Length: 242
Image 1 (spheres, rainbow, N blue to C red):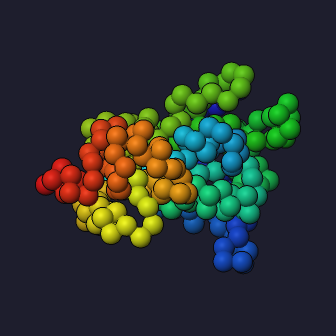
Image 2 (cartoon, rainbow, N blue to C red):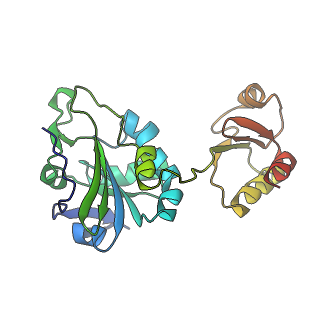
């Protein structure tokens, strides 16, 4: 039975991490004392839902979460530090602190260590999220105790809505570019000047000119999209932002 532990203190655990080719032990006291921390725990690095949705959305909403009083966003999984570091680099999730609960001590202390031997995973964390203030759990969102890997309530949007239902979420911005394009550089500078985060799709690496034509109806770069709406090139973006 997965227990809601709101009002309780988090388990006292030391995590063994690897930073700059050196072993660094980090305690839960260091992570949580005198801070407001959002934690989201998941079954494993590089797994589908964790990589496609769970971690990326927390990374996207990190800015607005921090504007609303969150000091740090922690992703926890029963993986070793090398796997967690490699996953973080692969995801380019610079706003997230990954914590390797390699021995499952924290997950077990939370009552969230489950057996996934049927998948060849062994003992792993159940998927959940929580808001922790100075080491005390204020709120938990625990996925339903059903078969499989449910993902309904531990997402970043649910957490943000709990913290501040009126918080303004950042726009989803995508810009298609190619290397050495001065107009692409201009468009990116315009977005950065407004403090807007964006995802860059580089032709020749992430897509081809066929994709560019199919998506935008144009063959020149950059092409910018905001919340699913095609804005156009750098001059169009400048007019849009003005």
